[in-house]
Image (cartoon, rainbow, N blue to C red; front, side):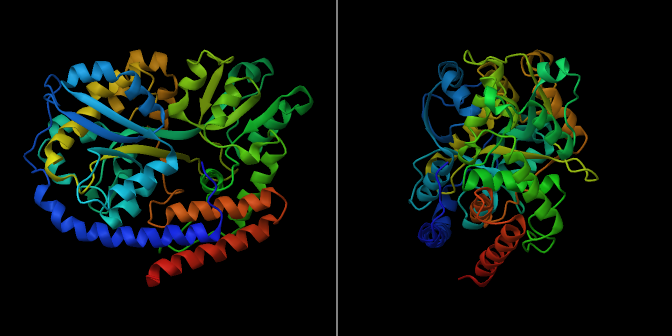
Length: 452
């Protein structure tokens, strides 16, 4: 991810978002005339959904995107048309989606979105509400088969903005073989995690205890939100005001500093992609990582630890209820879709159907949004992480409150990832970082509330 730490860039982002809001909300009046009707049913499993047409998707470079690329020939044959995939990075998919929303007619039929953007997109009217379309074709869409939380994450207020294609809890991955050899159990608490990490931290031998997202900006900001959750502290209170400078928040910051002592020296520059690579190379004993990326250690030719990785819930502080953060990528239809709305709906409901999602699983998508596929014996054998996700879901431990889907989320995550990064670099104490983050977050939310 790019480092967005400079104040001028934050101001530019705020001003550009305001412009998007004006343009998009104005354009919604025009776009509603071409919104597909609720009676526009999606294609059935055996129907040629594209009927000779071409659809264009803007998607992030996550496992489901790789699976779509690998499966494109088979999917095109099944769909009876062509798929054009524009695969971009995390920041770019949001930037391009917001830019696309300013056009009179969308250049894309479907876009992927991180559900933490649902508040921002919902407020700006970027995506087409789907609830009427879903209600008209529930037997084909099967909304009850989606993971409850993944489906709910794709909603903004009463509007369903998308359908999940890849949920992924951030689990703790650990070297099952190493722990078994030493008679250690997988850590369940933050204290146990530090003990295990210290046991395997041998930097002189090129072996480190754990790796995590320490890169300045969004990467570390999201990681800090998860650390807050591990200590039972939401980022916002019940009225939506920041709650960062608390004893639990300071404890989460101290935990990050303790992790720093048992991590690779470049962890302060480490983000999503580097984490699975490090453990796949055998250089670390544990990592925080999204469940959907398990194929990077289980099926990669470069992995030295295939079949040696265990997956457990994210550790929690002693005395705090266990909770595992879950993120979800969903697919939505741009609100300015124009006359292609019916085609976009047919494609969206088809791509997220259990039949097509099972095809994507065969091509490496290890993040399944449907309960039936998480329990499919054939898929569970290939993806043992499915059983862990299913168990956590049934126990109610998959939660998303630690990454609130409010319009301010992208800037809040950036704020956390810069302020606490200064702490990692020794410029602030945990107490100073928590106080500074609180002050800046209050200014951010006050700015939003006053409309300035």
